[in-house]
Length: 82
Image 1 (tube, rainbow, N blue to C red):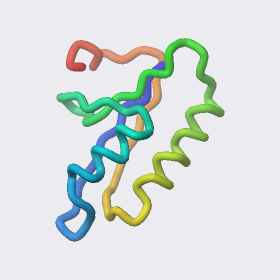
Image 2: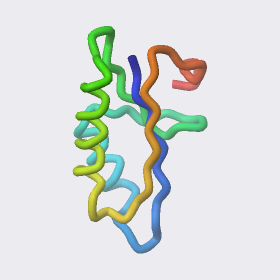
Image 3: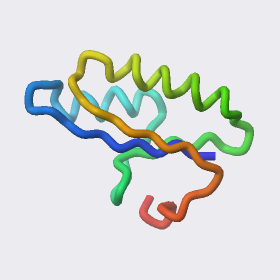
Image 4: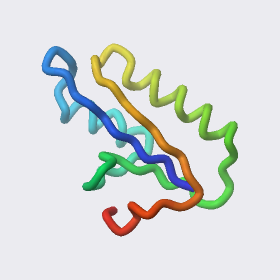
């Protein structure tokens, strides 16, 4: 399972480099394409794990003045872009 993350920066918010660093601290890896980051769960994640992780992303980005969108899926066609 993988969680994909798309971030929209704000000129009144934190520096992009600070946001990238914070997300890497959660285990995200920057990628190119439609999404900006990917987190690889391996094979043992549940829906409850994904919800818990969404809360962690929210807590990490809170106050940085960014918008984010996540998609967690078993498989993704975007994988060739990673």
